[in-house]
Length: 220
Image (cartoon, rainbow, N blue to C red; front, top):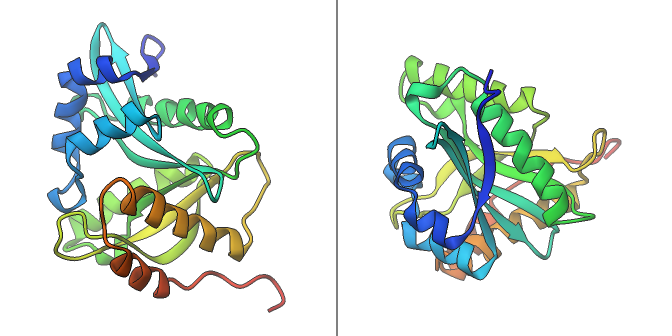
C-alpha cells in the first residue's frame, strides 16, 4: 500500500528541480527508448505534455509523462516508472489511476489513455520475457486492452524502430475502440508526438503507419 504517497502533476519549474524524477527516468528505460530530457521539458513548457510524480516523505519515488493528442482526442502515456527500491507497493498502479483520472479532465470527451509497452515475444531471454509479461499483466489489471500488436515505436535513437504493443484504456468503463479510432490514435501519436516534438521525419512515420494492421470490426 502507498497510503502516505502523494501523486501530483509537475509544472516546468518543479520538473527542472526534481533530480529524483530524472534519476528514475534515466535508470528505468533502455537507451533506444529514451528521448532527450529537453524534449520532455519542452512539452511541459508548451503544455502539449505533462509530467507527474509520486512523493514519499519528500522524495520522488515514481515518475510519468504524458502527451495530449489533438486529432484523436486522447492522452498518450509516454513514460511510467517506479524507483527500484519502491516496487511492489502499489505506487505504480496508483500513479496510473491518478493519471487516468487526470486525463479525463485534461481531455474532456476524449477517447481515453493510450500507451506502448514491450512485446514479451521479442524478449532476448526468458528473464526479460518474464519481466515484460508481468508488465503487460500489470497494465491489463488496470483496465488496458491491446489495441495493436504490430505497432512500432519510431526510432528515437536514429537506428531502428522498436516493436511494441499499443495499449488502450477507455475514458469510460465498457467503452471500446473501432478500428478507425485505433488508426487515428496511431497517426496522432506518430505525427503529433514523434513528428512535431521529437523531430522524426514524416517519411519514416508514414512507412511505420503503413505497416500497422488494425483489427477488423466484428462480422468483417
